[in-house]
Length: 278
Image (cartoon, rainbow, N blue to C red; front, side):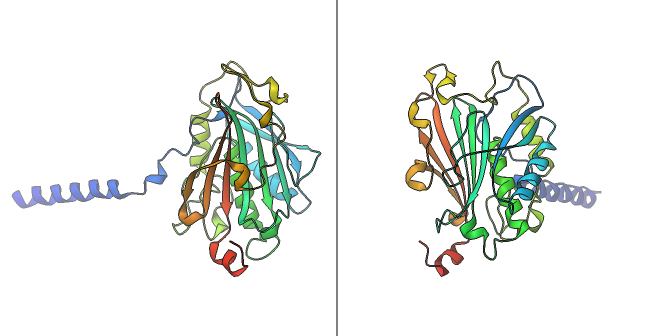
């Protein structure tokens, strides 16, 4: 009887230890702080302004379809104008651009402007300097980068930032092998439900001039308009740096709750060194 009790206790302790050691990322929150689009009903729609070339058009269509599978939001693609190189943001919308931005070290960046806790506009830049050559010139890599950067503009952070961990089956997981990480997973959709479980008294998903965006402390400053967030010199303060430099987050603070955050996916440092990049 005593031996049986000891065996039961041992089994219980092993089970408890196993639960403790399970990867925390499976149940972790991966919202980006409290930042979200203000809206007065669900599902709401985020417009994706198409400033990508024919190579990226089906990729953007896939990203839009993937995120529209969420129960709380839809995305729709609309035609855009203006320079894809500067990819100037438009209030109430997300502009998605591709160009050969140079040997910057990054595969893609996503920037969101916020006023208080509300996202007011977003941009996604996809760097063909890397995506036009191996190993990044594949549908899998393009899907991962496009899906992840659009996901950031919806208020999501990464599920995992160690590119040597096993794939989680989501584009919000950084990896060296994107084959199974090209689309959102159930945890992403559940996180969006959590982020958008409340309603707001206003909306930031309609086109408005930057000066029309009001918070308790006043309108967004003119300095936030027409910015070209081309590189670290324009991204502000580094506030997050993970996975040996593979991902980073920058904050540009204009005061009174008005900020721009930039999420960066870097290329493999080994390939950058081989190419002579810093």
